[in-house]
Amino acid sequence: MPDSLFDLSGNVALITGTSRGLGQYFARALARAGADLAITSRDASTLAGFQREIECLGRKAFPVALDVRDHASIEQAVAAIEAHYGKIDILVNNAGCNIRKPALDVSWDDWNTILDTNLRGSFFVAQAVARGMIQREYGRIINIGSVTSVAGYAGLGPYGASRGGIRQLTMSLADDWGKHGVTVNCLAPGWFKTQQNRVLYENAAWVEYLCERIPLKRPGRPDDLDGAVVFLASESSRYITGQTLLVDGGISTGATKATL
Image (cartoon, rainbow, N blue to C red):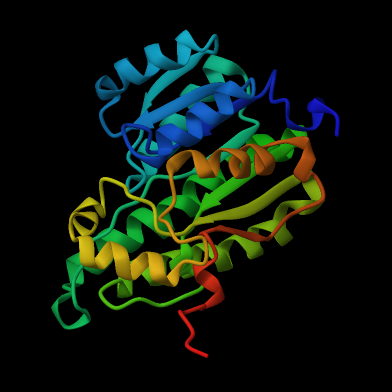
């Protein structure tokens, strides 16, 4: 298969939530494939070290302040990126949060914080970026979901609602914008160790239990997502839209250890 199908040279990618975690891994993967980047955090000063890292890979990195819970911040950030680069070809809607609580303990504010960040924020960032993509008749939007987009877990009610909403939103936007040459897909990681859930991985018994439920018998490593994000951002996925790509080691199959 020609390398050009995965070559992102000449493309500009906006990745939200790149101050830490999986957002940085997505950004590195796209940069290694040739894309120049717009990287974001609520405080752009926190991005200086990551900007230098991307530039050491030979790519450009433009740091921008972006709070996805603030509509004005979204509009200003997208305008600044388009003024700087002239376009945005790829959006990775990664910024998100979680508050892990039993359902009976979830407060009104907890719900709003999670849904406003993960779902409403993703929609309005996509909307702001899609305007330019539609004018240019080209775009790749990758909404970051989760295995909770397709499965329910105790203690993750609002989070699962937000990620399930991302899956539905992806299908709707794909239908809206496909005629303009814009694809919209959902990349849904399974159980990866991140800043949000690191406390769980300190419990050896829980990790053993988790691995028993994963057909590949281990949690995800961040670089397990590299190929998927480049694929969805590149020409190789040009006839794929509205889909949810689970990168979860197979846990969404519902497989458990069987005794015969």
